[in-house]
Length: 365
Image (cartoon, rainbow, N blue to C red; front, side):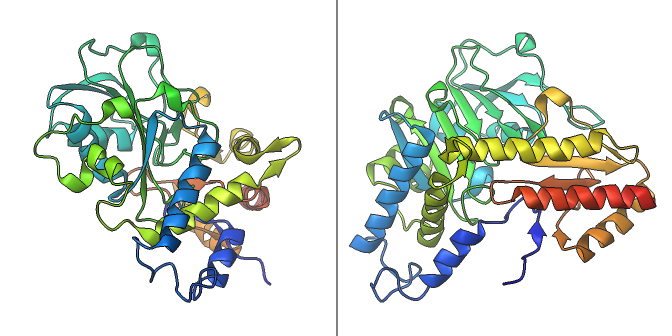
């Protein structure tokens, strides 16, 4: 079978070949049921098996404590920007940290439902590229929660550790970093993530929420988005995104099988992601043609924006990449430049191929 192109899309993103082949083999008949997963009832025993195993595998991978609910929801992280304050703010105060385009969207959406205060922000005319020192953050003691985005997909800014300095319930958008490395689940009151980066296809949203945060929803919160209702109904208050949950379950199993030396599972995935990011950033830093605008201490291991010092070469760079089957490297329209998203499914060989091309392009230009 010929080598597939290397897909650097920020999302919907590449999925592991092994997972896609597995799903293709079961497309018309899941485990002798005579049905595709897309065709079976979400109330039936077959899908019940898929859902329970997916949750169990996710809990194991992330070491989710027993007093947290795992919810399989819909709407993506953009919908969670509203669903979080509808569930957790009590219509009162909520504090936000803005380190990029997505946390900016989060705080703007939350203002529709509660009193929002920016505990810290790096917003400037030149864009984002850093995280404010935590000692300079100014959260309110009576806020219902403190929200941050663990990894800014557009801007390439990532928290290396959870900001646990404060006693407020911590809420995190982990859409583009969940399952890329171990997570301090117990340090958070709520974690949410759109699936289309490291988890599965678009259409599924994961929410991991402490049981003490349930039952706070505003009266205006739709029932299908009320965490307490969703938890009580085991993520089946309404018809869940069944096929996306099935695909996520296959990804969870794939992660469990990963090895890297003596490391296994999520630890192995994290080490491989570190290797990929180090390789790409080393190329950028040693170059006279490429540059990064993100501070070293908070560079993302998932999304690597970079720029050509001579932007007149952008089209030529992208054309050459396309010819070498290096796909979807164009940066976000709000930022420009290039962006290589190197999620779990991107092999080290894909990043090496990109680096080889970058060196070749620099020598010829």
